[in-house]
Image 1 (cartoon, rainbow, N blue to C red):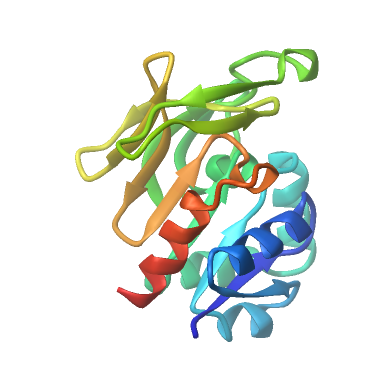
Image 2 (image 1 turned 120 degrees about the vertical axis):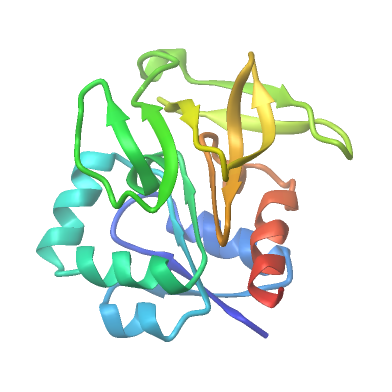
Length: 186
C-alpha cells in the first residue's frame, strides 16, 4: 500500500488523513524532510498560504518540498492549491510553481462568504466546501480541468499533481482522495 503524507504544519491535516484512509490509502503526518521523503505522495492542506510559506521556510521544508514535487505527486487543497500555482495574485506572493495555473487568493470573498455548493462531475454531483477559497484564473495547456463551478475550474490535474480550490476532506465524499490515492498506484 502506498503512503500518502499530509503536511501537518497548519490546516485540517487530521481530516485529510482520515479521508485518505476512507479512500483506501495509508496516511501519515509529515513535519520533516525525512518524513516527506518516505512518502509516495503528499497532500498540502488548506490553511493560510502566507503562514504556510513562513512555516515551510522556518522548518527548512521549502526546497525539499519543491524537490519532492519534481518526482512525486502532490495534491493541494485551497491554500495548498495556492502554494502549487505558478502565479498568485491578490496579493502577489511567492509559491512553489509546480503547476501551470494562476490563482487569485480569497476570490470568492471573506470568511463570511464561505459556502457549500454542488459541483457537477461525470459520475454525479459532489458537495464542495469553499472557505475563503481561491479561484483558478488561468490554466496552462497541460492542465486538465476535472470540475468547474460558476465557470471557473475548481479541480485540476497536471501530470502527477492535482489541486482543488474547495475542501473535499470536509465531506463524506471520497472521490477526490480516491483519485489521488489511485495516482500513486498508476
